[in-house]
Length: 578
Image 1 (spheres, helix red, strand yellow):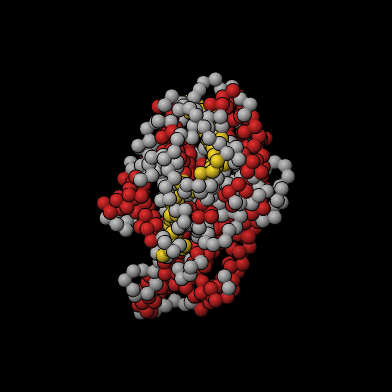
Image 2: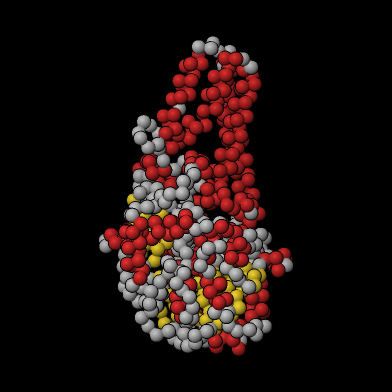
C-alpha cells in the first residue's frame, strides 16, 4: 500500500480502536470505584482475571480474523456464527498445519500480552488504596467520560465502520477497521425488520429493475437443444474461478480437460457467480435467488421453504431428481434446503467409507464421481435430473497424488487441487459419452462460486473474483463448439433451463433468459455489505459501509441505479418470506 496509505490506516483506525478500548475499560473503572468500600485485593484480582480472559478471547479472534480474511475478504463479523453449529466442519476447511500453528500462535500472543499487562499495568495496582467516598464522584465523572470515545465524539451519529474508510483501496479500509469492534458491533446490531438498502420508493425500484429484466426474458435464437425433454446432469465444481480456466482467458495449465471440452460444447464466456460461498451459490442456481449482503437464506428453513425450487419444477415435468455430495450436508443447513426442494434421492458423505475421505472435509472427488458414474450406469428411468457437488477443491485443498503446482502458498495449492478435479471431471465425461443415455443428455458444468485465488489485479470484489465457467455438453445439444458471450449469472440458469424444457419459470422472478443476446444483458453479484453490477462494457461495484463505489467505469451511471434497485428489491423479498 505504500508508507503513506499504511500510516493512514492507523490514523483513521484510531477512532474505532479508542472506542473499543473505552468499552473494555468500563468494568475496570467501575470496579476501582468500589475500592471506597474496601476489599481492595478482591477487586484487584477481579480486574486481573477480567483482563486475562479478555486477552485470551481477543487473541483467539485475532487468529480467526487473520485466517479468514484471505478467503472471505472481510474483517471478522457475524458471518462466522452460523458455522459454529457445525464446528467440526468449520475446522475442516483449515489444514492440520494451519490448526496447529494457529493454536500455537494463539497461545504465544495471549501469554505475551498477559505478561505485558502484568508488568506494565497490574503492578500499578499496588498504589491503589482505600478511597474516600468523595473520590467516587470524580471516578464516576471519569467513567462517564468514556462515553465520548465509545461513540467517537459529540456528533449526532455514533462512530461506525464508515468513519475509518478513507481509501479507494478496500484492503486499506479493512486494515483500518478494528476487528474486535467490528465483530461485537455486528453481533449486537439487531435489525428491526426494515430494509437498510432502500434507496428508492418501492414503485421506482420495481420500475428500474423490471425495465432492465423484462426486455431479456425471451430467447432470440432457436433452441440450443434437439429435444424438449433431455436428461440433465448438473456438475457444480467447488470454487472454480475463470482466472484458472484457459478457455476463458485464464491460466492455461490448470484445467486442460475443461479447456478441451470447451471446444465440444457451448461455452458461456461472460458468466458470473452471484455470491462467494457455496451456501449463497446453491440458492442462486437452484432457486434463481440473489444472495443477501449479510444474511444467508439457506440457513433459514422458515424462509427457504417458500423459495422457488428447480428440482421441484423438474419433478412436475416428470424428471427423477437426485443430489450427490461427498461431505456432510448439515454444513450450511444444506440438507434442510435440499429437502425443501423435494429432491427424490440424496447421497452424502455418510455413504462413503472414511478411508476414502480426505482428512476432514469429505470423500475425494475421484471416489465421489465414480460413485456418481456407477449409479448413472444403472439408470433405467428417463428423464432424470441429477446434481453432483464436488468438494476436493475446497480449502484445505487435500487431494490424491501429486500437487502439480506444489504446496507453497495458498494460490498454488488452489491450482493443484483444481488440476486434480479437472482430471476427475474429464474422466467422468469420457465415461458419460459411452452410455446409452448420453445421446439424450445435457451436461452442465458450473462453478458454485468464484474465488479470491489466485490473486488478481484490481479491487478484491471486482468481477474477476466472481467470474466463473459454465459449459454445456452432451448429445442433447442441437449446436456445439460455440461460445455465448452474453453477460449472465447463476440466477438466470433455472429460468433459462425451464424455458427450454417448457416448464413453469414464472416463479423465478429474478431470472432472465441467457439466450437473449441483447447488449443490455447484465449480471448482479453480492458480497458482504456490497454489490457489483456489470454489462459487457461497464461495471459498477458499490460498498455500503464506505457508501461509495469501489469500482466504476465511464458509463456506469445506469448500473448504479440498477444495482441499488435489485439489492433493495431482493432484500425486501427476503424480509417478507416466511
